[in-house]
Picture 1 (cartoon, helix red, strand yellow):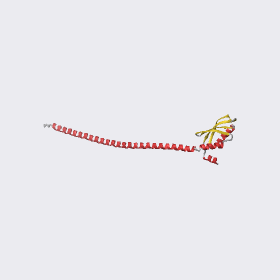
Picture 2: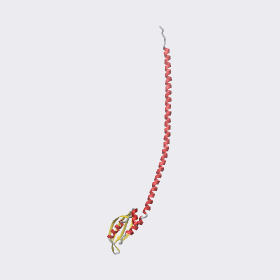
Picture 3: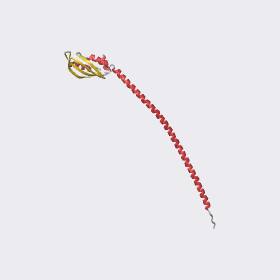
Length: 190
């Protein structure tokens, strides 16, 4: 029988397989590193792109914040101007009130009634005076109530007083000034 020694052949194949294994392992490690580097580069590019977008958005938001602040100041200026306009309009509208008040008092004052003082606070007017009797004070209140410019006459007090040896009724009366509708003004003018 013939004996063949296969040990060197097997050893040679083992070395070949080991060499192949190391080459394949090295290639796999290199491929893994390449994939890792490509993934890292891709992700870094995405992060950088997103940071550029964020910077752009921050710049635009800052610009919009400045515009919003400017709009707020403009709105505040508009509100200030509107409030000034309303004050001026109310002053313009109220300047004829005193004329109407005095005119109505002259037109509606009955005989035997004399006013000592007229005080106005806003739309409220206080009349203090003397009358020959309580009936004349009542007549004055009815006359004032029929006026389109005066409303809500209210008697505060009536007391007896002696003036120049004559017995008179001293009264205090409150009335309100109102703005009549246009139809009432036309009726009064006729």
